[in-house]
Amino acid sequence: MFTQPELAEILEKVIFDEKELKALKEDLNALSIKDRSDGTILKRFLHYLAGTYEQLLEFIPFHYEQITQRMEISTFAKIKNSADYSSQEISHLQSELEEKDAFLEQIALRIQGIYTRISQDK
Image 1 (cartoon, rainbow, N blue to C red):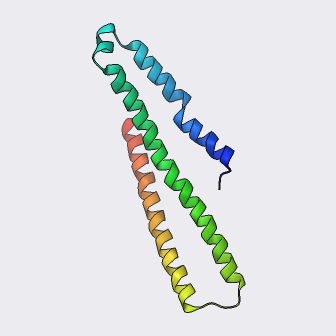
Image 2 (cartoon, one colour; image 1 turned 120 degrees about the vertical axis):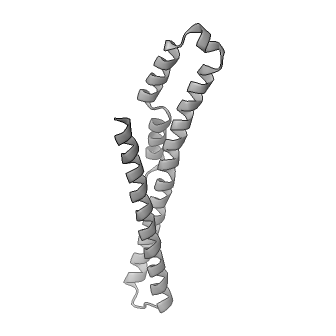
Image 3 (cartoon, rainbow, N blue to C red; image 1 turned 60 degrees about the vertical axis):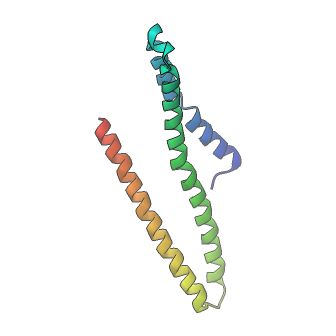
């Protein structure tokens, strides 16, 4: 789990990615006077913002899922330390385990998609 300053630093790196900002600046400098008048600047800037938004969409749910998992692990450890296991607690843990398996499958699909996009770009 990230501390508040660590989270702020990560978000800052995503939002103000120097490489992406430099590429945006170069794109804007490369535009001719004619291109600057027809909304191309706005389109390029919106494209940059859309990329940043996609990166945040990938990071933020993962971050909150990590927090949730840590809380569940803590809860599980407390249950494990107690001598009593009710069938309701066991079935609850089994359902949580199934949810985690489904989540891992989603992560695998996401990674596969990212890998495919990277492979196509090369």
